[in-house]
Length: 335
Image (cartoon, rainbow, N blue to C red; front, side, top):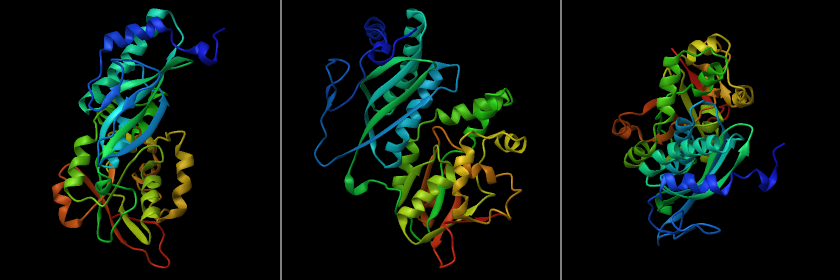
């Protein structure tokens, strides 16, 4: 029987060897990090900057720990990018399955090596963390970012006339729900993984340059849930959402039609009372995409109409207008 509590920590020898293989993480304003380990990390916040913090953690859905590490890092950094902040540092929380020491060492190294690929390119230093045993691999990060408080993007801030843009296609939830049952084609999975491994840092900078008024990342609550958060935070506005314009990953529509869905889809469907036009659009192939939970999803932002062309890779999916007395949060439109 394996112990719990601190008895389930990964051994010091394994951890020391893994960190030696990874090497120190570059980072500015890090006073104490992995290059000089102590009881806690220490960072200095530059004058005029605010510290943005978030945390994400989930169990694996892949057999490849390196790729899973990349996806987990992209996902965790999404909140920082969505606020227009620059990633600064991260603490890892890694769980590896109990096994022979050499196997646990390799699993932990692959998880963190994949994550370092993303973190290093984003200028985000891995400065510490915690590792332990568990029934299956899991990985998450507590991430820090820096931003000028006056320029931080928030969920609230939708303005009448803004266009809603999305920076990644939807459908990762249903694709991997089907993949667990051996029903997703390899090409569909590969495209989904390519999207999930793509950082949103450049997209965030493009949105800021285009004068975005509000932004969030689309993750577990699905497009409808996260859009509802933006509308609620913005006041008396409604969004006209085009179902035809929703971008779907290859295979997502087919898998929904075959009856597949993420286990979180039912919970996300509770947001349907905020949406007008559900009955009329009941047979639209894109309707389930509204409630599909995304892992390492894209950014959802409100951009002034005359600056949409300044965000060339973003997909326009809706428009913000004033909310009437009888209006709901979201009104669906399709041809």
